[in-house]
Structure formats: structure tokens, C-alpha cells
Image (cartoon, rainbow, N blue to C red; front, side, top):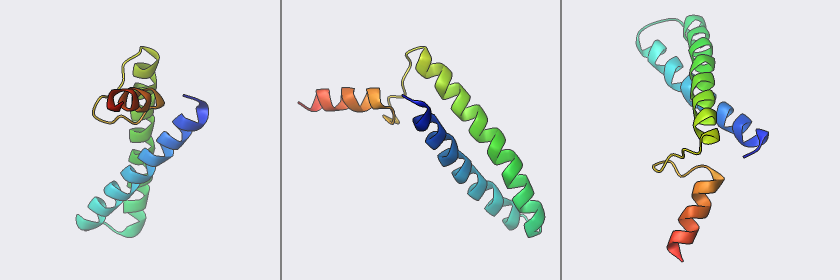
Length: 82
């Protein structure tokens, strides 16, 4: 898994977290500026923690059996179907 994979993963998580946190803040009655700021701050924190932990687990050889989102897990899944 190269750098591109982890950058894509980071931005995927960042986007998801940003949207969810921003919508929740708006539903709580906060104004748009506050909601976007909170979503940006917590989105970056969330994406960073998630990506660093998954990178660490990947280097240790642990893969998410539920996600099957890493190239190694795709290969195992294909081999199992044969």
C-alpha cells in the first residue's frame, strides 16, 4: 500500500467526518460559521487518528476483516472465491 492509498483514505475519512459533524452542529442550532469550523477541526483530528491507527495496524500485519478495503484483503477474498 503506497502513499496514494493512505492519502485517499485520509481524505475519504475527512470528507465523511466533516459532513457528519457539520450536519450535526447545524441540527443542534449552531450557525453555519461555527458548524463549519467545528467540522473542519474535528474532521482533521478524526481522519488523522483513524489513518495513523490503520497505518500502524497495517505495518503490524493486522487487516480489517470487515472492511476488506486493503489490497491484501482483496487478494485474500479473490483467492477464497476460487
